[in-house]
Image (cartoon, rainbow, N blue to C red; front, side):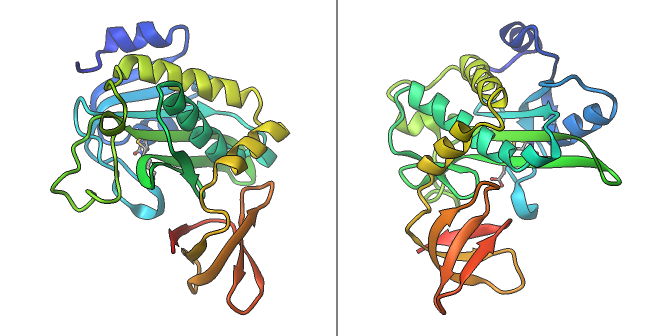
Length: 250
Ligand code: BTN
């Protein structure tokens, strides 16, 4: 069933919500709304995205009727900013497990995987006025019934409908996801948020290649620190701290 304005507004009330049948990118709309004074927790939802954006300049597909694309405006302290990406990945994991999903884990920093295939991605964008943090947008894409067979993502991506006994209702899924976002946002600076995110990381202990810096770093992912950085023991024995970027496993 397509998401509709009336159903989304009712399911998420009393949250401030902007709904679009088709949008370019919900993150872009949410960023503009943030600058125009969006309240804390305001959400932008689209049934379809035409120019969905992923991390590191990638494209994110949101075909109509088959996925969730939601961006939430939040106002963390600057110190808590790195925790937004933990919050979003955790909220997604919680919801999938509440539906009976198994083998759910997080590939550093915030890709949610089921059985090693990506089901959800998170794009956090902070908005600054010179040195001052104005707020941030947490964008979450979740594959619900996207058909990846016969695409280049067939081996690396998955939809909830592929792994759950019953394909979830997107409206209920959206409401449950935002409830978990609220839950973790209320605990943003807690030890529990960091510990829960760390415990779900499938990356720790694995051989990784980290890209996104001047030179790729190859080694073993040994831990994460409280700011979310990945600690990789490279093949020369040096502990490297990876703050941003992406990793390939193996
Ligand atoms: C990634 O894994 O590369 C991050 C993907 C983030 C996609 C979501 S969908 C909702 C929001 N709007 C966007 O344009 N991107 C994010």
